[in-house]
Amino acid sequence: MRVNIPGATYFITKSTVDKIPIFNDQRCAKIFVDALKFLKAREKIEIHTYVVMPDHYHLLVTLTDSFEISKLLHSLNSYTAHKITKIACKSKIWDDRTWDEVIRTEEMFYQKMAYILLNPWRRGLVKNPFDIYEHSNLSEILEKYGVEFLKGLYGKYRRFGE
Image 1: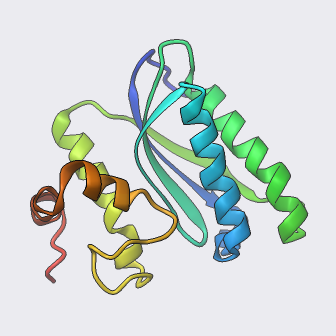
Image 2 (image 1 turned 90 degrees about the vertical axis):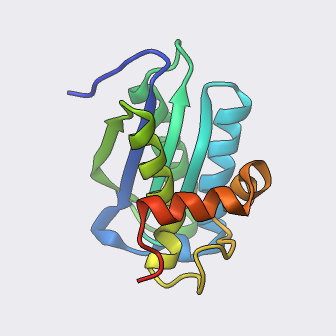
């Protein structure tokens, strides 16, 4: 059973069925990012950070009081599946399981933010953790908070110098 707390912040992860790298196709990744932006524009979610990896996505979002987590997941996953199946020629896009976790502390919030932002670097999709990955909002984070913020975040929550 999914916990719904009005106005809560959630860390969400969802994989493609059989971990197929559907989002290597730029058109599919764009569909997902555009769907996020649409939901944000409708003021149903506040997107703190996101990344669309080749075979999964991560989100850190805050919902409005009237928009439940189950509605967000249904809207996002059903819409993107409908659009992507036409491009990817697949009958099923998303794995049945979704991982969602309520953010309970500021510490947890920043740990999840670092995890999401470092994901492309950890997977070898960018050479440097500060390099812009096209299907994330790292550029927005840099613009909003600056490089020093990211250095501190990465240093505290992920040993990116290893």
